[in-house]
Length: 69
Length: 443
Picture 1 (cartoon, helix red, strand yellow):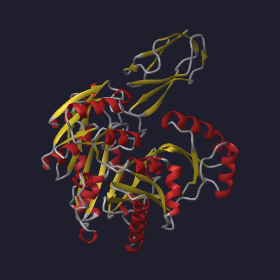
Picture 2 (cartoon, one colour):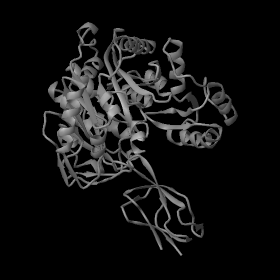
Picture 3 (cartoon, helix red, strand yellow):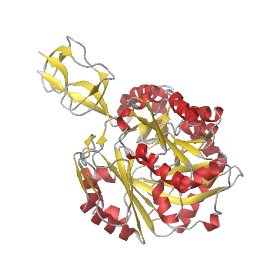
Picture 4 (cartoon, helix red, strand yellow):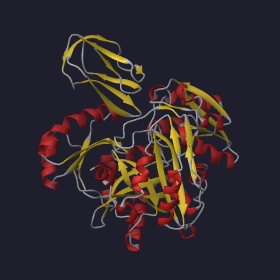
């Protein structure tokens, strides 16, 4: 299961680390787009296995951010 | 003054270049990698890339901008609005390197940028300020003491903030306690100062501001008021001049206190004194913007003056071009800020402007983009301003409806559908709306 970016923007804050347990609906990343902070929620519950981005990275819409198992 | 560097982007950079062309002043544009295709880059006589797309690596890089100013031998720098326009340190550096900063003195920018000190200065000068805390509110206990004494609801604000950024509305003690720490932390990261203050929140307020000018000869004039009550997230969406439903007496009082504010800081160049007006019609000082405003065109529409030309003339040492008695307002002006965002959720909508076809009508369109350009997520969502002049406010409303109904934008979402709803809203049509209009329309 992957968490995808809902829009193009810059990764402003990573709120989880590898190995963390996340719940469905939990805010895992805050993106910054057009001077606005956009919270990204996880659509699934699971454990963070992989983080594909670091703070300051630019991501496109629908780009993968995290992998959950 | 033969050459000006415009330290800004998008529509305002194009706008400043237009006046420079009319005054036969050469222009230099600075741009980021993401902006290289935008019209303002081509509009300038010379242009140079000053860094990567994020503002911190380009438009906020003072040294890169100053290097460009030296390389192209400019005489002056126009900062536009936002970005470095209200950064006193930038103004100091510009002057220290021998360039003219088109704006007020660095000291004035520093003083008015600190909202706690600006409240104190204005209050001492006899300008009414919103009831609130005196000085910095250091901790949560002091915050609740102040809030209890002035009464809820209150606004928690960062002293280094402004323009609607860094503030939170608290309706009770628990909201205040919850917000205090985050506002303080955010203030520290965003504005490099964790000083915060508290103001009484005025319900059903209107946002009214006065355009002022000052020169080095100690002369001050006002160019009437603007009503900017249509807002989302405390940021303006529709502005107009003059403000509807104000009595002559209220207007005179407003100009008088705005000029008092300008004199209190010996203001030079263009500035705006922002007020909020409560339901009883009392005005309270909110903040002073030490730069050209986004919404300056509505004032240009009714006065038939060019505010950028005035800024340049005052910056090169001239007196204010007109005496107060020769500044007249005619008709009504209204500006709509077209944002690349979802019309209901206000969430950003970056993307390619596949189609941009404006409606017909003799409108002024200050656009930062043209069809085919990419609206990138690095900057604020303003893509264009549509400015209408009519003999009456009603005529502006009717013409705006026609214009936006005929306008087509494809590739991104815009707030144009929201304009059409505002233009049908009874309180907006009657001119009795307050700053919570857009919130109320959501319900």
